[in-house]
Length: 228
Length: 214
Image (cartoon, rainbow over all chains, first blue to last red; front, top):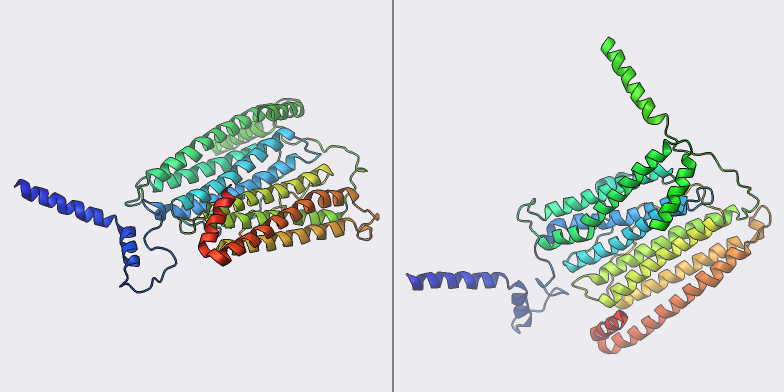
């Protein structure tokens, strides 16, 4: 009984090992003198893909393009606060920092897609992103913070969707590396951004109810300048 | 009926108490305008250039993405192009800052940048073909800056014969300086790489890539 058990175990081990040797097999084939010339420029089966990257690469591409778009939008919001009539350097810095953050993240997402063997597609946009027309970014203080809060929440939910997809929502799609990356790079940071902006909205809302909201906004802008 | 009327009154009271006291907008400021000297054709050219620099940034980002791929594996080229992308974005922001300093961009800011900018090309045959494209792109940007200068220093285009010396000096001293240095660097890279790949093919590109990594 024991030898039979060992034999079966051995066969399973060999089969499993062979299943994981796609790249090795293609190398053996490529190096074999009897094989005809290789048709591909790259070594077949030797890319960096494994796990569930194929299932979410489209979502990651759209996540990167959304970040690029947000970096432009925040830059325009920042620009509005930097004109001599608005003259709110604190708000200018708040939105400029967010623009810089989104730009840097877009490059990081592109690098991560490449790290997992994927390819960036700059023409991949979220459907609602493609439909949206150019919006108004010349907003009052409370409006702009409200808009930023909505934008950060939407990004957080986009991150959740990717996390969800690689956590076995899609059949056989399990990729702890991608879910961990999404958690470490986005989920925590976006939660902080959302909390910060929600706090600002709450403060500004109560200031706008006071008699001299103009002075309150000036002081709040000073606070933003110093705290950011 | 009574219930409906009561409900309507209740909702109106709520909405009034929610909005009535909130002072979201403030008075229009009274600032003399004599200091606002930039003229429309020049401002328009500058605004176009802001978008142009951002287009260049996205094109460089696509180059960075291409050379980051596992099957391309040229991290030095990728780093060089990603850095160039962020540099072009900084140029765009510097132009915005200049217009703000001169009292512009108080309106129509929302259309300054398109929300979606896509690169013209996303795939290259080799490192040298991407560097050649980069040099062509830089030459195009340089010519566009020269076009801005031409419009901004032409008094005949302005209603009040205004020659914008300061802006022209800024564009010439800061932007063109950087453009010419950048172009020379790229031309040098292309020249070295061309010789290396001419003799040593793919090994030349491999070695040059590691040099770009620093």
